[in-house]
Image 1 (cartoon, rainbow, N blue to C red):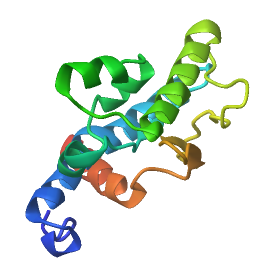
Image 2 (spheres, rainbow, N blue to C red):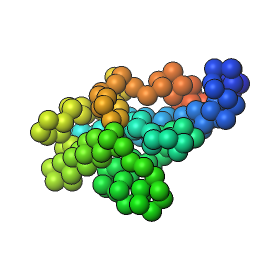
Image 3 (tube, rainbow, N blue to C red):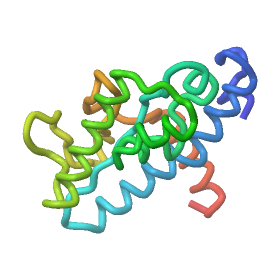
Length: 162
């Protein structure tokens, strides 16, 4: 693991650990699930990476952590802000509108796309196309840390015997 996640490549040992655990617990298992679903389903599969950070000390300390997108998707930024004292930003409002629109479209039609939203492509195993969700850069990207996920997949396949 030290060779794959050298501490010198990160701001601190803590951030090296966060990247390692993020890959092992979220990014790479999500890719494995998306690939498995895509191979077995006729309906489209979509994948996303939420990268919007809360403003101020919270964002600096925690980054775009697991589950944070739900606050935005369910239009709860103001409720969280009033309960915690967090000062929401204009960027938070953009992300809240974006995720609320994607999620509402998906619930109503089975497709997150519509209106002026950026096109959220269906997932394809050959390209790993993934929607990156942030305040001003919602866009399709070519995958989430693919070299690291290939590493984790190799460990899992080796442990499973092939």
